[in-house]
Image (cartoon, rainbow, N blue to C red; front, side, top):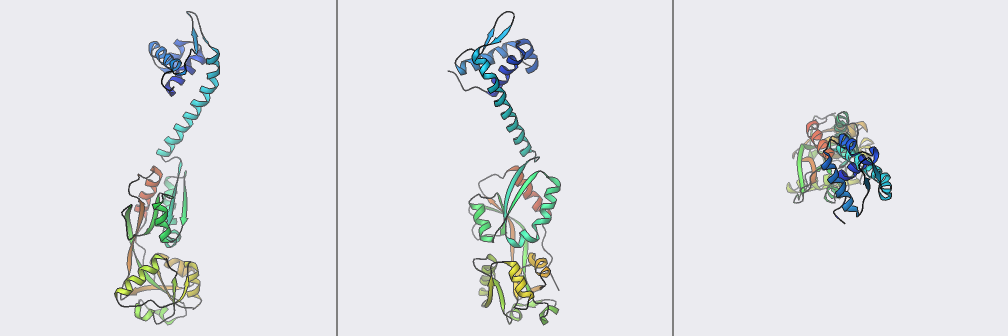
Length: 304
């Protein structure tokens, strides 16, 4: 037995088997007769016996050659389909990519970017995992997704982080509150009201607590929720005030709350793309990353 049979050998054998002529097979394959004979011999050596009977007048198949014909057709069809699918993946005519995005971006910045991506690459399927910031980082680390969109993580030893924009936190107040008429608001004024916060382990909550602690300001929480939409509804109903990334401004205002710039201190943090540092992105994921970098811009601070 020789080496493992190759696609080239199977194509050569099938050309001879279908034409029953080395001359016509050579024309079909655009190779010389000696090259074709050598290729067929290599296949026969590989499989361990003759596949063709070649006389001066005609070519015929041995029983083993007859048995190989339908198998060769199926193997070559599968190979061609696989080759075509891979080519389509590389040319972005086909494929899929999975990303994870923190809710504030998934709801507010991502749809426009995906629309731009879809216009360029309509046959690429995109799966979006809308999960909290910490889970975005974990999904990228475990390679459950190729790309993540999140706040800059504290440790990036195993992650590549590409900044997209800097998001500034804004105050969210009830429409009936006197604060809703202000142009902006200080932390000290905001914290005179009952505060509705995102629950731990929310990165937003940790960022706020850590930054305020360096100023000697405690974060007195009256109500907590895991969901941004719930926070927005609670504020809109007059239950208290909140603080969210400015990305969430349109969502908060759609729920009936008002948002305004927050200062003393201004708290901001980078949002960007995460990917495993030591792994090359697929062509589809790289294309999506490129579109995100082109289309995502710093959110406009919301006002009443």
